[in-house]
Length: 245
Image (cartoon, rainbow, N blue to C red; front, side, top):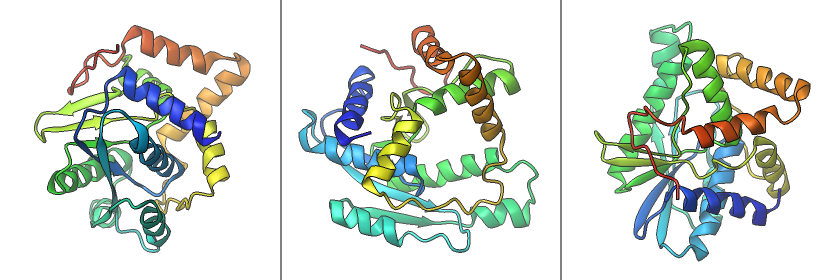
């Protein structure tokens, strides 16, 4: 995927769900993976011509895994002229050493988001961008269906009233394969996840299931995405339920 296509997808999502307003200061959550680095690139480029003026600030929560290195990410942000903040934490130690969690993903995600959102507020940002893409939306719906017994997925825009902070997901319309293609084309400095359970999670199982379904029933994934958008499965989110234009 070329930059022009990435910007087209991103702007459509931003416009459809009114993700950005004039004067926004948006924190961009950077894990070091392909999704977040692609989102950083998209928002940085969109910032140059979008009619609503906004600024971005990249933020990484260091979970405390040995060997996690943000040097290349910092260099990328410096080249872009984007301010970059690393938040140190002991989340990995708490989950694996202290609590010895058998199923660590949920707690890790909660603690990581908590640390990120707190840092975002301290930086004076009013919005934070998460790098969930099109495939993530469908996978989350399947996870909810299979493990919770309900049709539900994350919202394009969510207002966190306790934090007075708005979460946006600008990559909503971007397929994961296009993210992979863009990352390779631009040679973005992806950092391999040091998590010991990476690739062995429920989400990975659902990702594999979705791939199999799409092979057996070509177009199934796209139809699921369309059903989510048209059926407004975002209803029931504890945050803001945005109205599409």
